[in-house]
Image 1 (spheres, rainbow, N blue to C red):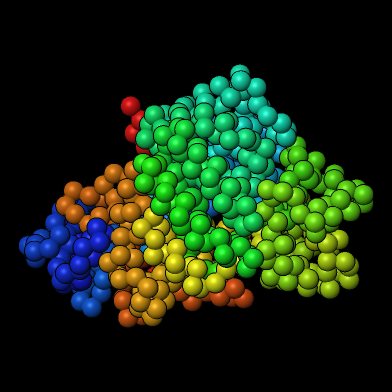
Image 2: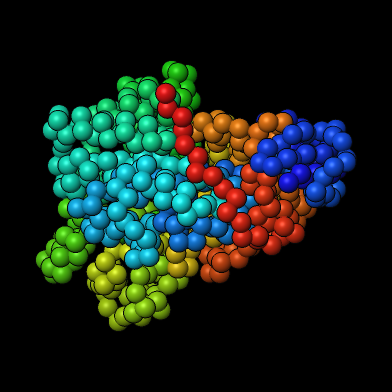
Length: 530
């Protein structure tokens, strides 16, 4: 298939100024950018008045299970995403030894969902990636090996420190999964069992990742009260291991912590001056989204979801949970403290019994159920076996813009796909281009596109993607710069953006004239580890 995109404004992803030109595609590759022959093409796309740029790379995605059930991931392609990075937050699909399938599915459900419609016996990253390849993928899919899965395979789900032998086993598993094609290691240091680890455990695994020039992607221990100490830990991991450090969904949560932003920026700059390679991704909204279970103190999760459910059945332990939430625990990110009970909203549940609570705040849930707000929330977590998603409000537009303008930043969605999701699932990339480029003028179009394309490709090591040039893969977005904008709101998030006209993945049309074309155009991308 030969495609010609004619007379568009080409913004190639490098940050260079756009120019009027053509882009020629043959099969899965770009053959020319700029002046080209106009003959011999099977399809000609009129690009006049449109921006033609590389496909967007979502460096923080939670489509890990979704791609096995519905491989097209329409909310992503409709906003121009052509490549995703799976395996986030230290909790994902692989590795997954057979003896842990049942408890791990419950632990995973709040982030990535659950289903009986797949074969859970793939065991390793290699098995998971091959399953994706057998089914086919609509986008390009890449993978990070998750710390929590590694820890589970090496030593189970208990809250304890590993022995030297267990640390070695974690390193061996990390090496195996890097050789299978993982692009790096992820951790989520507020999620179990990752939160049970100390720094040196992670350093040793990161030494293995650094051997392959992989990236360490981290949801750090704190994005609130102790963010400075948290960042110092992560930077120290980079210092000791030599690994590339990439902070997930970077922000400072809670009004009382906004004064720490200058110090946070200083830490980024001083670490880079020292030679530590640092980057971060960011979704362009003032609210976050994760599993509701994070509102509970860490000890409540000890041993996994089954033990959490038992603790939620104990009235005395519920009292202790309330005490720890209201009084705080040193080093623990207390979501209720920085967001408030009235600014945390349920986005998804597993059963029909609690569907009426989707879109409601925790305060409203207490009122609806006629109970104390904590008791109603604990009941919900118990009845749904912890598989509850949430949205929480944490910051200001000024702070979003400040971090967006940083050279370390690239754009992501971090969108949970179940229930009534965060609007970022549908709109992160168009929101940057419409609101922050066209309306707020916080970034130039060229700078914003670079942050969506070549910047993440460089950080993660994607070869042949992220820049429009001859020989690269034909992952391309064509959009209208005058109309592009996100449409989803926190109340009605399930709305596709405006202005994305065409999307091409590996030379195949997946969005044409603003409508999705269901094509398994993607590839499972593996990092080449010699």
